[in-house]
Amino acid sequence: MTLQQINNRLQDILANMGISLASLTDQAHLTRDLGLDSLDVTDLLVRIEHKFSIRIPDDDWWKLQTIGQLKNYLLNETAFDG
Image 1 (cartoon, rainbow, N blue to C red):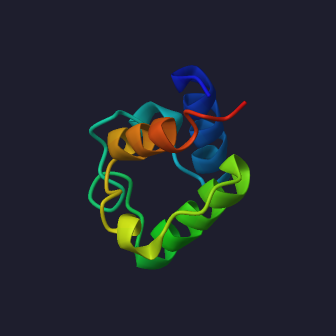
Image 2 (cartoon, rainbow, N blue to C red):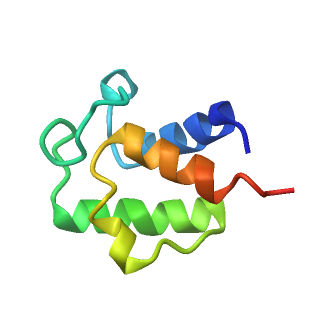
C-alpha cells in the first residue's frame, strides 16, 4: 500500500470522527492536538484495524500517538499487501 493510499484512508476515518483535515499533520498528537480522549483513540484504532484489514496488537497501541506514527506503522504493516 502506498503512503497516499494510507493518507486517504486515514483522512476518511478521521473526517468521519469529526476531525478537521486541516489539523492532520504528521506531528499532530492524537490527544493533545486533535482532542481525542482514550475512548476516541480506541475507536480510532478499531476503525483503522477494520479499514486496513489488520490487527494492531495491544502492545503497539501506546506507541501510536501522532498521525506520523500511525502512517509509519501502517506503511510497515501493509508493505506486503498484494
